[in-house]
Length: 321
Image (tube, rainbow, N blue to C red; front, side, top):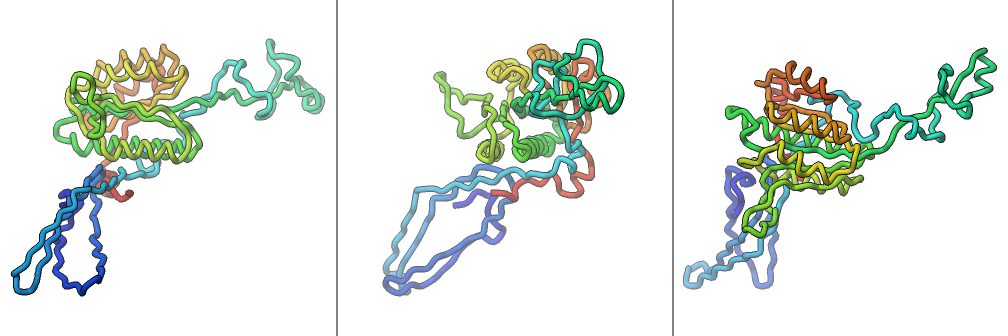
């Protein structure tokens, strides 16, 4: 048996005859149109003779699984800048300067250490010049994905939530390609999540930031099977899970509608020392007001939604297994 999402319109059936000890391998193409975690099987098999006097039925109960990843698209196709403040953030605090990474020189200002003066350059230009170092520290990035059904417009709940998952996958891919550590946290429903002591399914999955293709595969596996959930307040997830993340991490928050309840949580994250980037995938939101309000607490924000995305199939999911 096959899930309806994977079966083609012409259901697979075959009648064949075999000689003694003969083997035949049958193949069946799967149309992976939707992301998901699918079980294939059980396999039912019937055999008999031409006269119908003998009939044997076999069933293989062991099932295989197929994982269909969400689509990964370039960030430029989502209307996002190709250089977003992730991972390595710049700091004005000189304690983070790396003397081995010289960016150039600048004019001397009172308070600069004489140890940083570029004497040869100063002699050439006729005034004191000091070396400029790259004041950067490598930090982890965690993508926080909101899949609470109430945070998406009822008319667009499926399309918008799938776009949020595509965006999360695309952000994770971008970070891995740029050799950044990336993790994922979501309040969605994971069919493979273990049940708690009270017998209830656990929500609030957290994959801690890691580097490399293995980290991306781990995130895509979760994004392939994650589903919308009911009554899992996103602001509560932020407060509960971010306490487990390193100080100063970058948080990429992907949500639908940005409600008033989210802003106190964002402000708390900023006070806790996190760098926060907010993405909204709901086109009905009055986003300019949200952008200004987010800027007041030091949060960079983007709205990810264009009609051209729908026309060009950007929201189509599946295609990678």
